Length: 123
Figure 1 (cartoon, rainbow, N blue to C red):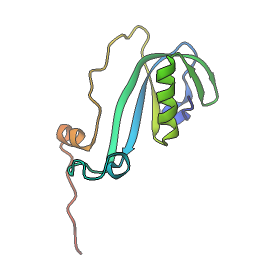
Figure 2: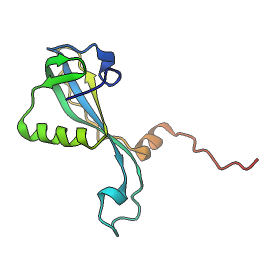
Figure 3: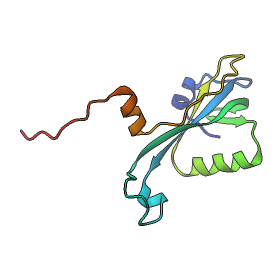
Figure 4: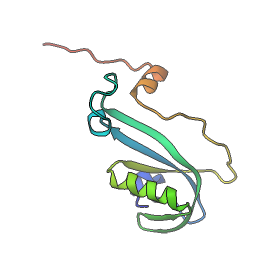
């Protein structure tokens, strides 16, 4: 997979490192869902850790060779072609913890951090 340095721990990843793969999708319900679907859906971003403890087998510039099965390789190829972001997150040696997250969208980030929503201002 190709991942630019700024999305791969600043480019310091080396063969033998273990990474988690984080994917961010720019979601547009008009593009991805059938017309007349859930009217509460809105355009936004969605982020999710897709794979955990993935070994880096080799690296050439921004191209990382990872170990995975063929079905996952196909899905990663699709996600890469979709134009969304893939980030590599370095795992500490021996860290076997499984992230217990459900992903992130504006709603759960807003609920967690209580972001202030700007109001329209007319000078």
